Length: 342
Image (cartoon, rainbow, N blue to C red):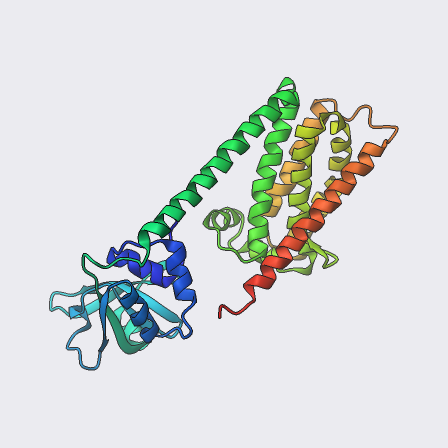
């Protein structure tokens, strides 16, 4: 598993064998985030290191990369220093918060502390207990793949035994449910401020940062109790479960879908005329709801809804239970993210 901290990024740049989880945990356990702390961690990995003062260095371009420097917005890994024909530094390539960037040397130098940490790895440099940690990492990856294979098997079995394949409308309905789960999952990540490059790219289709703007509004929640992303996730998850486990209740799914459609019209109106901002993920979710309505209509699933039976109440109850569970999980993640690392 690839690490997510600057320390793991540094080890990767140095070519030192390490595991992301252990290295990230060691970095997070540092009582003080300082160059001295980095130095002690590097020593644990058998990496000789030294601090250099740029005031005594004749030219920053003479310092071999990579090395650690501190800027106003945090520690960075200097990956490369570009020079002109006379050997004077012109541009600096660096990594900040797991993202690579390039800036002019003048701008970079004016924003750094003047002290850098240089590392000198050798053939003996390695993470303590690397073999054991690597074995655990491989085992974790195998568990993920095993889970994916078993879920695929159960999905295929459910698709066959539930008779979903007998009706093209149900197959399309299942496809919209899966797409809806993926889209609302990305929306939930946006709500929780979890970085997702795919979600960022999708959100920029209609309007840059449109999703973030819409999700920051009070209207993105239901009376401040649950977010609409949680509502959408619970809706598509419940629909998927009923398709697989209780196909005889599909008619009631059509009724629930019909009850959701007025909200889609309000959401489009709100984005277009009230805040003049488009949330691409929200629009996709609403389009999926209308595609489901089309599937129900063309599959003739709007018949035999009445009289209403106790199965409908059971479905609504299951939906509410799942919605509250997702909301509790989101609140737990939010609370954990606000806790201090030490």
